[in-house]
Image (cartoon, rainbow, N blue to C red; front, top):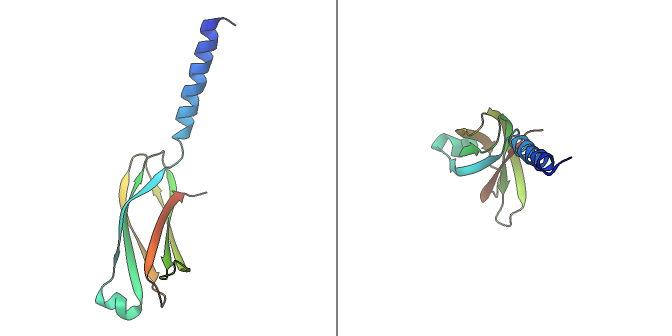
Length: 113
């Protein structure tokens, strides 16, 4: 195999691996906030709204809101799974019960398996 053939084969392998890396979703949380109206407070509910950006390829994504107490102990989790296109940004909502002692939340996103 000549030098040109080796370089061409290496270049093809690098390009193929780069393309393969973008076939699965690569979601990130752009922003998130908790919304709670008067009726939500009475019913012990909250809605977490978030802007999610998919920096990878199309596919299903799972967003999980983890409800924490003041010691960062997990009190509850709520998840939503949805489909996103490559390079898409979308606003999602996760509705959850607010357990007694809840102080904060953490929102994570990952490709669904």
